[in-house]
Amino acid sequence: MTECSAAYLPYLIGQQLQSSTTLFPLPAHVEKFAAHWALFAIGDEIILKQLNSPTSLSEADTPIAVAMSGGWNTIESDAGVFTSLIENLGVKGVQFEELLTLDPSELLTLHPVYGVIFLFKYPTDRPYATPDGPLDGTFDHGAADNIFFAAQTIQNACATQALLSVLMNKTDEVDIGGPLLNFKEFSKDFPPEFRGEALSNSDLIREVHNSFARSNPFVDETQRTGEAEDAFHFIAYTPINGVLYELDGLQPAPISHGACPAGDFPAKVVEVLQRRVARYDATEIRFNLLAMCGDLRVRAREFGDEELLAREERKRRDWHFENALRKHNFVGFAGEVLKGVVGARLVEGGDAAVDRWVAEGLERRKTAEKALRRGDGDVDMGE
Image: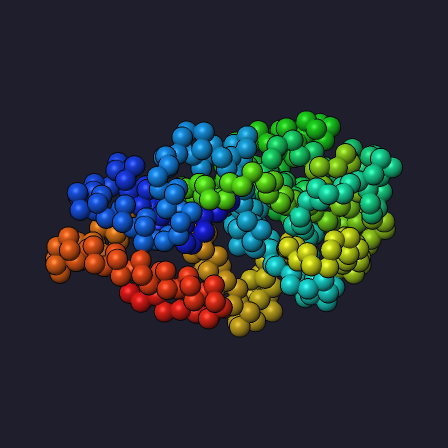
């Protein structure tokens, strides 16, 4: 499922206003306005045609049915999301930082670094691995008996699985909390496939994971072209027992990238990532890299760095606010705004004022679209 485009959202709100009046009571003039709003919001022939077709969402098309796979929703690759997610699972003293360059020095500044989480476009046009082994490194089938490695058995769980692949192998360095420690103990004798099934069926882990999924009450039908969408995948890199491992639940075993003392991890993992990125076209830039490191607030307090502490505390407040926005459904708010705007227009001049405002808005929209097609840049849409 794709996210709604900004231009299409007002149309969808209009349709929701018409078809789901249980969300909030709608006076007759607002129901009348909703149809106009759809026209004003889109203003092009393709979407006007869509207005003449059924637009109510069937149960199979609801966001929950579309977005969920085995009960797991997709979540973003975001430092604030990942940090809050593991804290909600009981992990203490760990945070994530986004890395903007493949430079070992950037990792060194975050010491201690427990591992990195790499998001990349899953290759669908070339082999992900060869019959003889991975494209880089070697399968270490025996390692799964000594480290935590889980096969990914369900879609959309790869982000949290990548996080846990690092945390579960760092229990000597990190306080992962009672729930995760109990899960590790419970699954320690399982083969990777059963361990992955146990993870996917953990109510606690799934519920915490899903709590960071974006609220998306609409399905954007304009994006249903029938073409397959690009798939993206999370994996983890972490040093364990002096070896750099790539932990990817879609592979049959941990992938060893050779000897790696803890101090060599920044340089070693950057080399591996550079080789991986080099396998893509030069135009492919859709990568994301997050470092799992110690809580920077702890370091700031230890060294008495008030500036760093203030910056990190401000970052946590921003993360909290952003995560709250991700979870919130703004349909009710949008409906109240629409009612207020229409009510104000009615006070100004009744139905005629509403019709005039809609017509003027439609003209501004058409003018803006023409200007954009000519390449005139930003256009003032007016009030």
